[in-house]
Image (cartoon, rainbow, N blue to C red; front, top):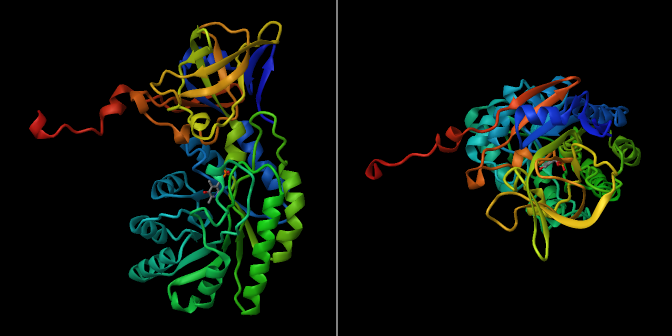
Amino acid sequence: MHDFKYKNKELYCEGLKIADIARKASTPFYLYSYNTLLGHFRKLEKAFSALKPLICYSMKANSNLAILRALVKAGSGLDIVSGGELYKALLVGCDPKKIVYASVGKTEEEIRQAIAKQILFFNVESLSELELINRLACDLGVNASVALRINPDVEPKTHSYITTGKLTNKFGIDLDSAYDIFKNRAEFVHLKFSGLHMHIGSQIIDGAPYILAIKKIIGFIKKLKKEAIDIQYLNIGGGLGIIYSNEKPQTAEEFAGKILPLLKSTGLKIILEPGRFIAGPSGILVTKILYIKKTPLKNFIIVDAGMNDLIRPSLYGAHHDILSLRKAESGKRKAEKFDVVGPICESGDFLAKDRQMPELNEGDYLALMSAGSYGFSMASNYNCRLKPAEIMVKGNKFYTVRKRDSYLDLVKKDVIPEFLR
Ligand SMILES: *Cc1c(COP(=O)(O)O)cnc(C)c1O
């Protein structure tokens, strides 16, 4: 469910006609529905209410300050993966005790900053990292809390680029090594072993891989208990899938229904780290048709957004539904197929391939749906293109939550050295 709906053949976001925003703001831009964003956060909260978990929104999905602030105000914690994300998390007023930090490649500087802020815990991905956190905590004269990120070796049946819980992936620690670490925990004088973490991948539409992974981890917790090793937290990560075309992902309630009994049996405090589930359906990318071009072999719709704005189709072959802001009269799709492409000088620059499209004209506006996650957060300035604006709608009002880049933004960090002047 989301708040992007046709009324009288015009696509609306909450109470506003999107074409009106497009005319005022110029394209391309990301458009977020505040109501959809909060709605998805609440859905998860409600589905898991029996456990009162800490929900740490995974901010790499979309780290616009307005999005973060809205979620933090609603009670969300944050899952971070870099020093930059820690900076933004603190800027929007997130309680450090609601911040968890994963990443296989945390630097010394990043770890020091996070220890100094006393975040809830690090999700630790290797023995070397554990040793480093221990040493840095010692230097700073404090203790740091850690959860071991377990790699449960399960196949989540999603795109190979976004599986993270198989032993061939770079993430986490295998169960045997984790057990050895726990047995030797006394060596890590400055660490508190708070819990276990797993995150098995992204865009997972079925509960089975979670159940398998959680069962493996429950077995592991029992093994720890036998050694009188107690932990407080079980962090089951994110990865909940959303609808991009005709997937039938589990709802928050179905997901909770399947795993709540397992989670309850642990007696641990539960953490969830959803990113896409909360931000994905809440945003769209609005773009304008520049040209319609027919060649003897193919038809192209050339739009003013490209892979620098939304890289998911190029990177993962991802599908985004494309709607016209004004619904075609007949509503019928033409038999002809089109590639929807951007202006960038790469053949990989496409937003859709061989897509049946309704009757369209140059100058029409299109909306790429479910683009609120891994959209703007993966945008770049490739081809010296200006990163798009981000706009948030709440009710009958819209707010620019990030200005479009200017040409000055493209050059302000470059330096021409003296010898070239
Ligand atoms: C990316 C990531 C998430 C969020 O994944 P989604 O598929 O967006 O829910 C959660 N936890 C960790 C550790 C991640 O890296």
